[in-house]
Image (cartoon, rainbow, N blue to C red; front, side):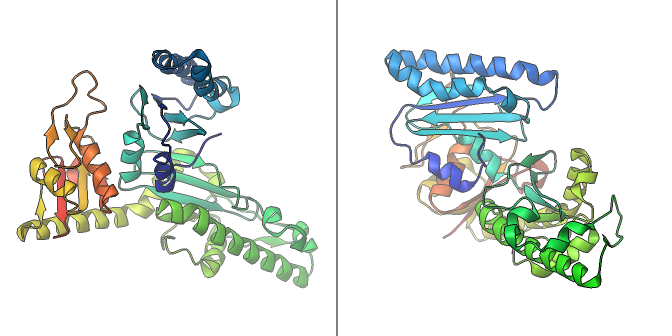
Length: 384
């Protein structure tokens, strides 16, 4: 039911050219009893969408558009596996559900295009990473940042077990082998049988890891562009890295089977692995802005950056994570339009700028306030 949030998934939403487009956002909860209120709030949001649709569309058209939302509201299993935020977007021939590890503001929008700013801001946030949990028995994928982590559904093309990966090619002796290990246990697997059988099992494991690496690289790392942290027992680290060709796999990993850690422990270990590179990258962006600004090729002035963005001159835009600036951007002239005071959550200049910079081929990164090289809420490095 749910979909992975990637730049490609976001771009796909732009291909829907037949309005109306329905967007529903709401905060959700991970655990009982707090999550009991989530389906009710969702139904209230769906009714708000339906009420808006009825103003311009027939009852039959309205029902056709609302039906997928109603089906989701009635899916009890789905509501037992929510995280901190939910985005549901539906239109002609398209219905997408994004479960997010961060809260989002409650919002319903019926418009000619999807309201994607909260999703874009999430993708632009610096410090996001993925964790690949590897063992002989199963593969798991997590996504997180400094503050939160969530297990993700693996794409169908990624084998979850050695049987899925090798099928009939799996050596028979593999079933006579067991592996033991817990937190920090670096002991070697215990093999039962002859040495030849052990060799066949080791070859199976290598083939399994090789297949997983190829599939994860193609279907997880390339679409997301996120650094990948390996979480596995020490002996599996050596073998997986030996066969891996994933350029996003970090040299520093987690030497524990993720099954032995709770989510908070896994988040802590992951951030320890990824934080040095995140901080170094943020420092490089800040230094690049400082150097460009000194040459007249950068600015933190909102009006200047708006004009440069419309002209396609912005190569990199840094945005302060918690900052919002009321108003909208005229994407042609670069002029700033006063905010719609009746709907200020939609009219955020920083989001408009970020969206246009990406459309023009630039890069956008959302940073914490203490990592920003300016106090204005943004910093732009120009191409020319």
